[in-house]
Image (cartoon, rainbow, N blue to C red; front, side, top):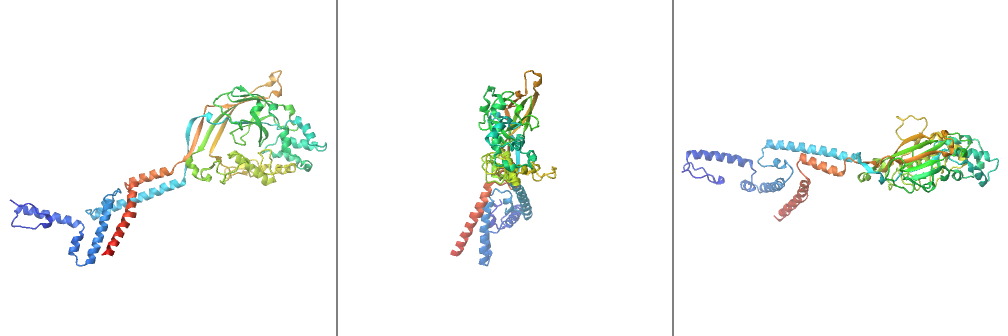
Length: 530
């Protein structure tokens, strides 16, 4: 019988004791074992046994210790491919290929991480529908502002003359000024053109804002048969006087902010408007009727809607609510293009004194600043009380001379697309980050009072304002890419390229910042002891 294979390190050929066939097997086994040992690193004890220089033995041992430390991390690392790169039995050619693969994966990781960081830094927005059928009860009923196109009740002119001691020589000039006030609005300062060569200093002591307020129409003079939510109400309990860039008007639901869950005709505000054309200024030849504003509470003015005489006007209101979510509020107002009420330090925060910030309020404040720039005064009839100086009679020609510069609001960068002969009002105003848009739909029907034998112009017209639908559309603007999305995307690209996670990063930091320095200091202390 041939003997069993001896242990490889102690293997010695004993040709005399081995069979022929077994000897060939032993030679083949020894050849394979030698090739395998040549691939393995030389252990320290063998190098030290064969080495004649002690320093060479020390350096070899130190290199082996560092390799063992590195192997202890790589063998347990969750970064794919790193273990294959430092595998002792790996051939040089395969090691180069794995190195190239890791370099390519790491390059893709760096490039995609740069793109993710750039996307996060750009902070792009998106607007989506947050609720398509939000209950209309969540918002207040619109503020309804009614203005007579003939602003003044001319029947009180004699009372004004006696109260302010107007002399007979001053009466024609007073009537001319009040006739201009009768059709005055912010964009119509040209009504003062006829006063350019008049002795206005004689009436410069009069407060025309006070006079106009005394001559303005009262609620019991032009409003009757009021109804709110199908219930008859006293008109003077629903409406109160209100300043507007159209003069003194009457406003409904400005302070109370009543709500209405019903929708459809006659479910909101119903009121009959009285014209009283016999009490209008004889010098005002403009068409008769009323001007209507439908605005959100806290908004100073809106787009005017003309209500002509002898008609029944149904105004159906549809609401669209738009807000920016909390993730966008960390950005400055210049980036998100809207302003919150509390951002009083923002460069875009300009509003009327004592009023909430809204786009329209900012534009009204801008109008006042332009009046101050051109004429060093503001027409306080159009705005709430403020610290600005009020225009007097002597300032009327200045307002008329600059009327062509106060016609339109102008935005920066619009000249290549909008052709205007005169410059407009440059107002850097933004929307409120929580704003409500009221869309109005008008239906008018002619009442034909001339066909009724007992009718007269005093009967006026009917106005009906109501919600068109029981719900409203809600839009939300948010960031397309938040820090949560950045973290998720970065984790995904790390998994795709290197197969690692946050725990892998912590392991790498623990190895590089704790184990390596500790191992280094331990070796230094050991060398000092030796």
